[in-house]
Amino acid sequence: MAEGRRPRKVTRGEVLRTERLTPHMIRVVLGGEGLRDFSAGEFTDHYVKLLFPPAGVTYPRPFDLEAIQRDLPREQWPTTRTYTVRAWDSEAAELTLDFVHHGDSGLAGPWAARVQPGEEIHFFGPGGAYAPSPDADWHLMAGDESALPAIAASLERLPAGAPAHVFVEVAGPEEELPLNSSGDVKLVWLHRGDAPIGQALVTAVRELGFPEGTLHAFVHGEANFVRALRRHLRTERGIPLSQLSISGYWRLGRDEDGWQSTKREWNQQIEEEEAAALSS
Image 1 (cartoon, rainbow, N blue to C red):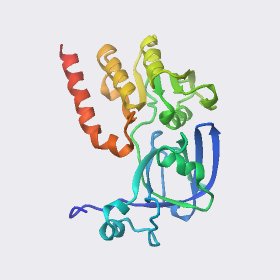
Image 2 (tube, rainbow, N blue to C red; image 1 turned 90 degrees about the vertical axis):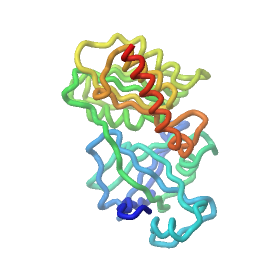
Image 3 (cartoon, rainbow, N blue to C red; image 1 turned 120 degrees about the vertical axis):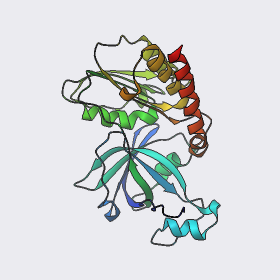
Image 4 (cartoon, rainbow, N blue to C red; image 1 turned 45 degrees about the vertical axis):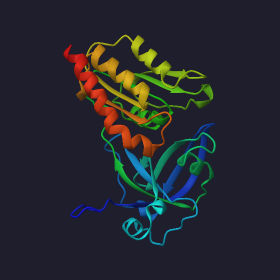
């Protein structure tokens, strides 16, 4: 650790219960004494970074990340995966996370499918930056399954009667979930089927007749369609960045480590393309 850098706080969560919400979405609720000092709620895109030990590696108790990284070889350090906070109940000290599960592929999805009550998981966080602005005239939310927990939390935070156009792309109708809001929400479920991820989302947003007034938008999910929608919103619709929460949560063909290692370069390229388009 660099000299003078404060260690990040690690929280211990105990699995209280799990629930399969759809064929490919699993809910895990964490609790326990380790969450008594946890806090979230300012943002609706709060996220935590879960720490998964490599297969066959058991760490001394209590969990001490500094000691692990000091004393163990790098290949025995935990792997980080980022997940949105679906809900935080401060009175019960319960943290709800929803996981997309596609069989044995990946790390966090298979963990959510097999984990049992009483098991533990450690994590950093929360981070976050977005919540629906009460000053906006209308809202746009668009995303795939990975953005669904944040979209669901954001809809619950909309002011009463606030207009919102919401597009959620999932594999098929069996992946739809109940979404609650006191806003004036026009929700469209887009079923991907065999089409490329995000294709239906890009088409739907492009074809939307934008209402008058100030927009506040949340667009997240697979990086390629997010890039296309950012280009549309910024250069074709002229929406300022200050009115957008827009970023790739993941990138097709990359795990989180691979995506995070290239994300800065990816975003820089987008910004350069955007600046050239806006100045032409």
